[in-house]
Image (cartoon, rainbow, N blue to C red; front, side, top):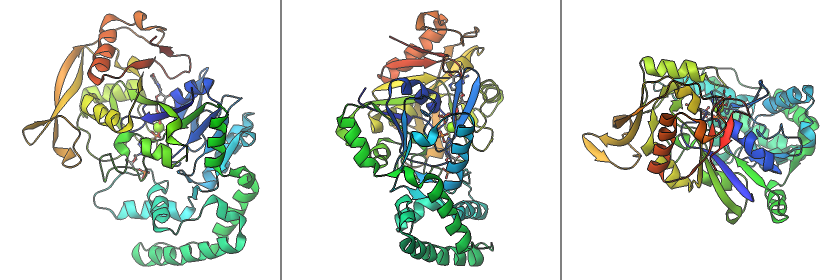
Length: 422
Ligand code: GDP
Ligand code: IMO
Ligand code: MG
């Protein structure tokens, strides 16, 4: 297996967590490489649902080691909560978790700033209000506080004092909100230190050493390529790189060790939050997909916007990330449609284009093809040949158009509702 990267190919919520859990059967180490608790990753095992926001989705496999990489913005309150929940379920999470000492800490003032900025915006992004943008902004401004800083108390005090002085002025003068007390944040950092400080390590050293020993490493992306700060629908994106560059920078893994890049792809498309969505179906069909697919955010509970499969969006993701194999998820949700639409091209201002444009994305007009649907419930299918003919044709059509093999099909939320194409 070597080193495998799992990337969401659309706007997130493609079913990455379910597939990370699946791939974890053969993995030794699973690494979250970017994003933070904006992620909502659902794994269902024997009917029991687990939702992860920060902890890698491979934690349910007893033999695995999970790592929170340097590219993640780590909310200590969320981490403690998630660990406690898992420990209550008998999962020895703190015996199998490492945290990068270079990961940035996402603190209560980042969440408050996210909410304040979103409230003040006339053109809202629809963020998860988990503090993601403000924490990455501090990282880029070089005023962030990193996990490793908690071990040098004098240095930490100095960093926190500087950060709070500026933040509190911003809260009070720009947003008419109360600032934060030094003691409250400092105490939180000390609580985090005593709860999880011993999990902090130099993760690039650890990962590359383990990879050299032959360990199988899975790099777990959050969000999706269309939410990428560089390659997505800017400014309606998240503040990190869910794409391959983020996997390398956010884990510190030697890129030559990566030999598989798996694109998790929903059989239709969803997006939560604002921003361009060329194949969005605002009418009845979108509502049917939302209800059948349970398309409500795992982090915020917001209804997800739903629409048809978008070939151009996928080609864009494949191009940038070097996707070597595709996992097609939620095919079962399309059962019952007489006709299934697929966008096979775009036009912008009356001109056909054969790429996903970086600007004027709200002017994209999708060019559709219709494919005959199928009636049957396919959630119990265990092989490609058990699928109804029209479902087979739909899968083949996607594979042929993308020219990337579809290796696995997911037909239900449970670990078992999965089969390999072979
Ligand atoms: P992630 O963010 O990419 O990990 O995806 P989410 O967990 O946010 O959303 C995917 C949702 O679809 C979850 O509720 C999963 O349990 C569910 N799911 C995953 N794969 C399938 C599938 O093949 N069929 C159906 N019906 N549900 C699925
Ligand atoms: P997973 O990992 C879907 C969206 C938000 C918003 C935009 C910016 O579960 O696929 P942010 O809070 O990151 O600043 O919000 O990004 N968003 C997601 N949408 N799935 C996610 O994660 C998302 N994480 C952020 O809705 O539009
Ligand atoms: Mg999700």
